[in-house]
Length: 242
Image (cartoon, rainbow, N blue to C red; front, top):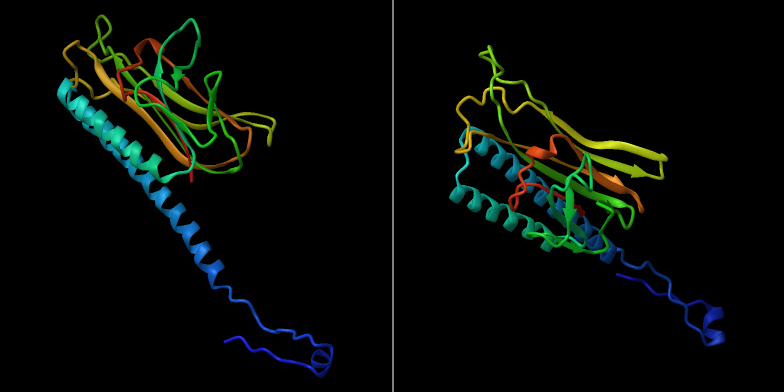
């Protein structure tokens, strides 16, 4: 309860001064609301990561078929929509391959498939531009269909390395550095995982939370672009603000 008091000087001057402490309860609840929203976004980001990794494991364990692949793509896009509905800023772009445009990167588009842009994040010259400093969930997936034919006179499959990297340029350190990166050998242990065309499906998924700064640029670097699978929902790149 707030207590009010008067002094003799106040009474004589006709003024009443209130002395008390303003409740800080409203600030406490505002802080709780912000922390709760950040927690929800983080959980959704983790669920999305788990969903993609589960999809990758499923496709590795058995050859993909058209019906199953379509169902998995729809589930993935529904997960993305749930995350997008909870965040204030996000971008999701899907990829195609035009080797005459970019020699070491998938070409990203904001109009293909289920791509979307909201809240200030933009795609410029095949790079995602960060509009303000804060926490962001960065993710990308590159999917491949590769031939694992054995070399002549050898019983072992060709050892192939697939790589996919998310790069970051930041004025804070005046240069570019890898933000996320993975190398994978799809032909190891893939003797029974061929599809109807005799190729093996393999995907690389990357995702984590980072503190990024206003003006940072993010882009991808990928090898073996000739083997990239650009079917809807297979190869993508995105950022969500938390």
